[in-house]
Image 1: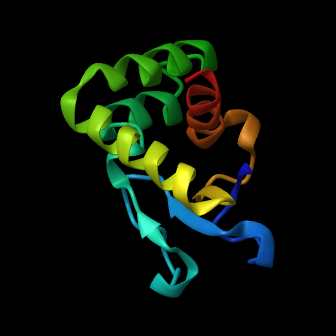
Image 2: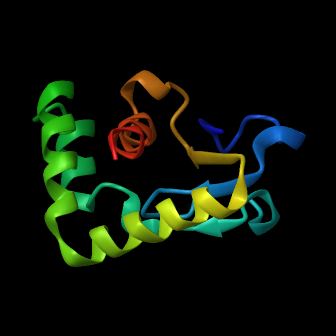
Length: 115
């Protein structure tokens, strides 16, 4: 099962493998809250800044995030994630955003489900 949640949400037994999928380590978070950090699956710093400063709409952000998967490093990280999902059963994609509807982790989940 694949799900998403905020790093600040309570850890639950059915989280399984907890994968942090953001570029920067979240403030105040201890390393034992994640199983693995896949920072190459987070949006680039430029894309994050453009979204947070309002220079991009959510739809533009989504399109550009998907385009970033054309790069080799991103593709390698994505393939590693797919392999982890196949061998781990339950996997939770986590980042610091509170709202999955406006977060790249929801987009990443969609990409995985499309494969």
